[in-house]
Amino acid sequence: MKAMSELLAAAGCVALGVVALLFYRLRCRWQFVYGLGELVVGMAMIFLALYPQTPNYLSDTWGPPLGGWLLSNGVAIIVGIYVMVSGLDNAARG
Image 1 (tube, rainbow, N blue to C red):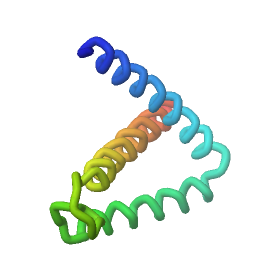
Image 2: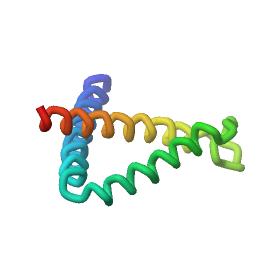
Image 3: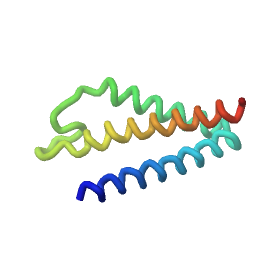
């Protein structure tokens, strides 16, 4: 079971690397659109940082706080992709 979760984690890293390459191409070809996307994601991250944290993040129902887990991991993934795109851009510029 542990080997399967490690395999899935490795596959996720590879898949997100491909996503980062696609975002890098988007940044190179359509900088304005990419910049607007950065603004939207940045505003969403600021909102999530300032939103009052509750046990059931963004939910009025009782149950496991799956939404909060997804949001926090989603923000971490977005930041990771952003850093990879920035790294690709810096490497391309020399």
